Amino acid sequence: MKKRGILLHITSLPGDFGIGDLGYDAYRFADYLAKQGYTYWQILPLYHPGYGNSPYNPVSAFAYNPYLISPELLYEDGLIDKPDLEAAKLPRNSQVAYDSVYRNKEQLLQIATKNYLSTNDITEYIESNALYLKPYLAYNILCKLYGDCTWELYRPEHRHFSEQLYEQLLEEYHSSMLQTACAQILVQEQLFRFRSYLREKKIILIGDMPLYLSYHSSDVWANQHLFDLDAAGNRLSVAGVPPDAFAEEGQLWGNPLYRWSEMQADDFRLFQDRIAHALRYLDLLRLDHFIGYVNYWSVPCPLDPKTGEPTLPLDATAGSWINALGEEFFSVVTNRFGIEPFIAEDLGILNEEVCRIRDLFGFPGMIILQFCFEESVPKVEEYPTERFIYTGTHDNPTAAEWYAGLAEDSPSRLNFQQFLNENPSLFDAKLLRHKDPGQVVPQLMITIAEASGCQRVIIPLQDLLGLGAEARMNIPGTALGNWQWRLVDFPGDLSGIDHPSN
Image (cartoon, rainbow, N blue to C red; front, side, top):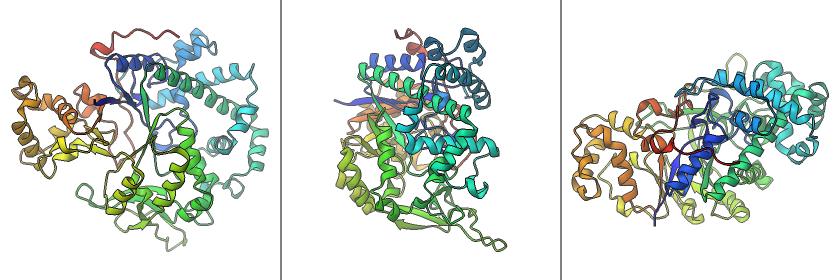
């Protein structure tokens, strides 16, 4: 029996505070999934986002996004008053108003954290999470003091984390740093409360873990020896992907690359800690850019002829493939966590070694249906049962946008039409006779995915609702203007779900 799920990030939920959060509408959506017989809810990373508001470019690979905190639940817990709640509201919109959200929620969290700290000592919480939390708190305050997070340009005494630096900053900025730590407690409490509700509803939560970390993050700042940096903290090489039919110059991501031998020396501790932290609230963890655990595209940073310092390359064309330590890494990881929690995001350039490592450890991979029509008419019934099949992901156009962007004579469009012609029994006849085929493509794609041999089907909510380009979540290779789409309200049968009882 097939298991079905919906892909929808928390920030895309509706609500009155400018951004989706862990409040009532998250519970409403969980109720909808349970009522409709869905097994999975897939979300994106919940880390504190950095530049571009991207969950894949976080300030910390551990710290939660404090803007996911629900003002309604803060009020319910007695941490804010009714006027505070009302003041935080923003007009409902189909785009996250990040600037307004940050401003309003910062003010709200100042009130809530002060109230929490007036009756709670959080010293034990900080010490028990010191490995990542102390660097995060120190880096956070330095970002505010300097006005940005470019730690490689800070004064020498601030370019590296140390316990001594943390204590110095804590003594001088005690109140601000404790409030930042307290916000982590509040979002964690709301997240774990929500996770318990999902378990009651028997909804399996799928999350995502980026392979690479943001250069301007507390994790890189505090663990520079694990990354390909020079003594001054400059990047010597950066991540990306090589040129292909979609990007002539490849994609230059700019993330610092790992020194895999250094990672192996401490048993890949940073990754073990990241995975353990994520699995505190997730049931399954998608390993983003799985190929990079096996081999990765390394783009060297050329030296500036005037300063002699490394500078970012203009594109990814000068890169080369470098072997990582895939088998050694996954031997350690699966020895601790088993294989059950993992999904391999095995998209991109798959060579024999990537496939060997995936199959050696038994990780289920992914199939993106939009890609399946590029070369031929797919035989979807023959797809492997263990794979997760998606009509698209957060990085793809919606199904409607995908079809609308295909030229009349493109292979994908011709192969898609041929599939429909050869498999009419799969579809409602009304769909095949529709006067505007583009309007029913999302429904057709969902039907094809569910007719595949894959036993697990994940549908972006945008495709379930038949939305177009206006609802796209991310365009890879673009730094700004992404991660903004959200529901104004729950449409159709979603809107009738009552508030959960708490």
